[in-house]
Image (cartoon, rainbow, N blue to C red; front, side):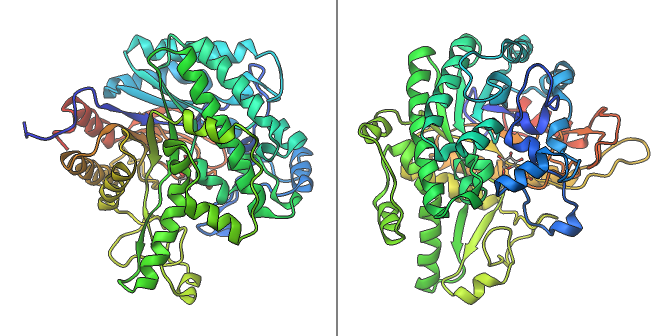
Length: 484
Ligand code: P53
């Protein structure tokens, strides 16, 4: 045993989301969600970019009329809805301490603005939590993971309308009351910053319907911050001993060179990413963001009491996803060359995944240290992993050594960060069982320890098979991260 290592009780596990996993999109009284409307677009037509926004009423109506394509992968997921017992047994075999999942909001409130919840939906999650409890697996539940009820988009243009706060809080209180004896760890919004990239998926906004796009996105986000703070308050009141966190798609940004212009550009991007956790962890809008709003003519409508609410009901821990790092440049021409997935500049020191995501284990350590320095609250890595094409050999085996190397390198850096004083409480790798990609709706972009026999068009037996990484992760958990 080394002197430093993962603390006792460290929450090892895997992460998923209802919309990418459950399927059964029209069973058990579930209403449509935003992601039920996103179609599969083959890579040749799409490039490496993500493809998940519905932008206008007309586009949505075409899709609803069945004229905008017929391959909606998130409607079928991997059929967890009917196979959760088999899947949870496999997670238990790996020794999971925790399982991150989301509740599909429209399974509980099919239209989002209903007064009475759908009992069949509530009963489904009771069964899932009971199954997890059989194996002593602690559920970690996201309230809103890209699953806004579609009706709220059609009727209110999503979170742009303040009334969504009440609908969301009603939903949150309903599930807190129902599951108060079964679920201790909660998260409010998955990757709350995704709205700046995809206003439809993050905030349920049809962006072509609004005049000032940036204004609309930040206004909707203000409503989400308020909804989140009210959910934190309700969670603490209803469930004793509960822990509720926020969730950020963390983008660690490096300057391209030591030219102060590059350094400033990187700092600016970093601040815009940390803005979200500043509000949810510190409890107030940072001054750099208020100046940004002023300079860009963005006016956020706040009601009296909002600021107090944000300040009083901050989160208990900060969770985030981490897949890659980014490079910023102070020179506008540089940003036009598309090198990395999000920002314009490619990092020559790093390798990329088949989807152009630049792999950077040390970046995870840098991010852990930076965020712990800034916030001094427990951190939880709730997503990390490698999306890759897997090959099934003739004997049925899947030798995903690339996935093992990716995760080993990241876990090593977590260990170093803990040694350097970071309070890290858990790690749930993304897509512990193969599921539908959020960004591209592909099935062939796989993250799992467990292979699921299904292709991008829904062909396959849905049979589950253990990959090589399954036994590797089992050993990591059994030794509490000592053996990698
Ligand atoms: P996929 C973009 C960048 C970073 C994380 O993503 C992202 C996205 C959206 O694509 O999303 C998170 O499936 C998200 C998960 C998602 C996962 O990362 O596009 O919280 O729902 O599946 C991986 O490869």
